[in-house]
Image (cartoon, rainbow, N blue to C red; front, top):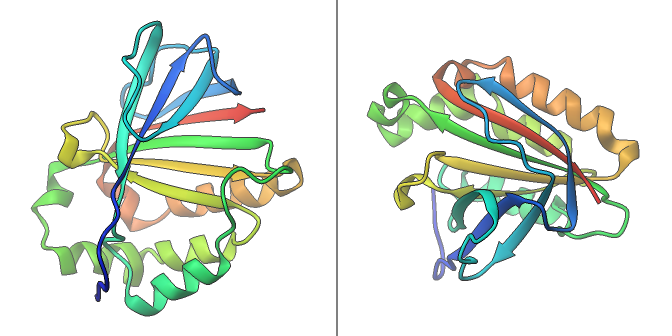
Length: 187
């Protein structure tokens, strides 16, 4: 795996509560404990809000890609649409925590499970450009989830998104997930 250039770190806060442009349509505990009920979701880039009035706040950072090769990184960048597209009125916030077994593995062992055995990157590429996505890392911040995955898509692409999520959850990688929540949204 190769990294080039400086790494830009973008802090992002997902705030569930009574305010925000996204209406929560469902919140499901897939593995482990769920999240408290929230009516709306706001996504804040940059320094986070104070959390006043929030039911919950999840924080992560967008930084360098940790599990992709240089070629995969270029391919993802070339095919990935921007967030905030007009027609993308559906979204999913899927916070995931991996087990201590996952984190006890070396980086190359995690990569082998993630791509060579589970085809995570390959599966994700199939959903592009219909589904915009961004990964946020929370583990090093001491957050309750290691990853906050954010997806935006048009209603016409909802079935394809469901296929992607189902395919990922059926892989050997998901044997290492010990907490996952699936929050669905509309705007």
